[in-house]
Length: 308
Image 1 (cartoon, rainbow, N blue to C red):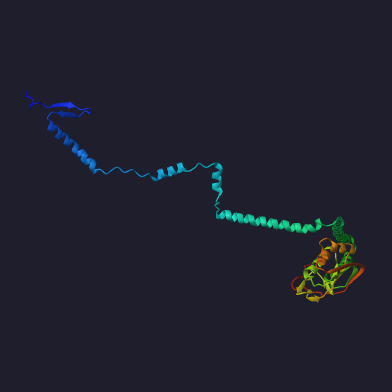
Image 2 (cartoon, rainbow, N blue to C red):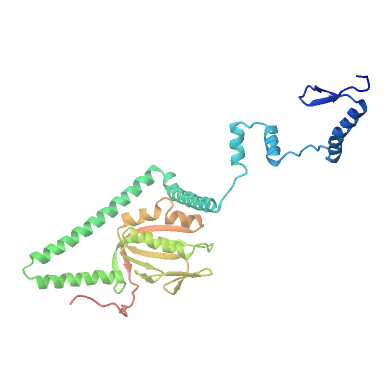
């Protein structure tokens, strides 16, 4: 065989694809045909673009970049700024109101007890004696009522005894109602108000203090004081049951002088309060005080006796 009549031989490439060896021009054409589609495909594909990171990846990166917080820092961040709800606000307002009320009550009690804290030992002893006297008066009144009941139960003539007690009770009630005159031991309280600073409520406090000390009959500047007595003020003019009175204000009081006078002179009491208003107050004891101002007996409009 001549050199031009070479028989094409087949060789194996490394990748296992048979490679035709022989005709040089034919082999080059075949390779051109094999490589052409791949080159064209590469030119048609777009260039590779780097993919954008997802939101989850970004959050993960941000969390990785954030500094690690300590327990105290997380606690502070949880408490501040405060997140107040409507229910929490209502509870806070209720607690504030309760605390304010307790504070006012404590302050009020402190003011009431301040006079006794600053009182002298002699004044405290006198106050205790006055309380003992009031207790004794109540015990005596109780004993008197029990004696009356015993007399009614043991009397042979219960009707006559009942009549006597009724007359006695009427006399006592007449004194209290102001329909009859009364006399007995007591005190005279005189208040000179040259500055015009004494008000009606101060005189009312004096009446209440005298009643608490056991006063049985009171007369103020010719006006009988009874259970329904009221005091009013118009400008600097004071009226008792609608009757205008002028200073000096003079109280005639029937009762036990040993109880009435100390009741007015207790620390923080009537006398001390009036003297703070630059009024002059004098208290005089007497064995006989006459209360002769009378009040007309009033018939109630609706109330009637239930006894037959």
